[in-house]
Length: 251
Ligand SMILES: NC(=O)c1ccc[n+]([C@@H]2O[C@H](COP(=O)([O-])OP(=O)(O)OC[C@H]3O[C@@H](n4cnc5c(N)ncnc54)[C@H](OP(=O)(O)O)[C@@H]3O)[C@@H](O)[C@H]2O)c1
Image (cartoon, rainbow, N blue to C red; front, side, top):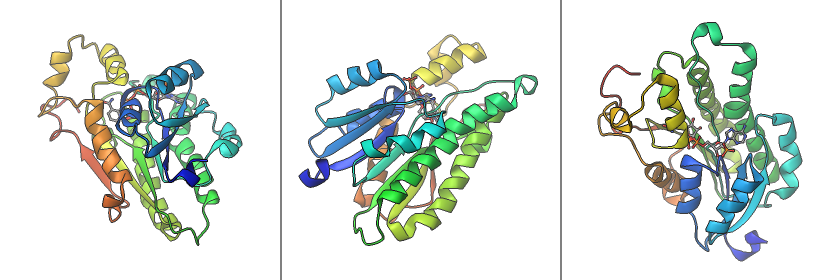
């Protein structure tokens, strides 16, 4: 298996789109074995067909957190990195906020992250000397969510709190955890968000952020650094990558 071949085994959720897909492309070489998790087997197959790196493909709706323990046998024995990029946008005024919708977002953004981390922690012995780097995709919305982002912003804040706590709890197993907080990134999620807030022109979105909006590859570059041993003293942080933040009072 890949651990014998000396490759780094990296788990990426949300690998079929946006930031997750850009990260798979960034790590697409013979030094990595990529465990790609997404909802659609077809999309995973198409992605793997474009990659040079060896892959394990897992099609799973991560909101169904009860299913996560069952994927343990598909994971490599040694996990060097885990990036939780799966996510959904949400723009709902308070009258449309419901426990069921809130729970669905929390399941995907927070509970699935913790369940996957439980599998990684369980697979690692205290005597294992390799480092595992974990990156959770949060958002600047956790500090500064805009109108309609109650559920999205609260779930990302909860995710960051989990990162801070679990950084302390899992350090003894050499598991290092950080959160990355992008501003606006040009992905399918942002295109859906534009439709929901009634903005048609991407130029208008470019103007919302001081230095324009980011490409997914620019977020992937930061994540790749955090995964590397060059970042081994960076742990328990929340790193903003938002070009300096909103240009106006959108958020
Ligand atoms: N785009 C931004 O401006 C922005 C800003 C700040 C933070 N973020 C965060 O960055 C992360 C990636 O966002 P993105 O912009 O790359 O979004 P995206 O292009 O919409 O991609 C989201 C990914 O998550 C997967 N996913 C969604 N629901 C899932 C579920 N229930 N189970 C398993 N996988 C699921 C999607 O799979 P399918 O292909 O099957 O849909 C897709 O691969 C998210 O956590 C997001 O909150 C994004």
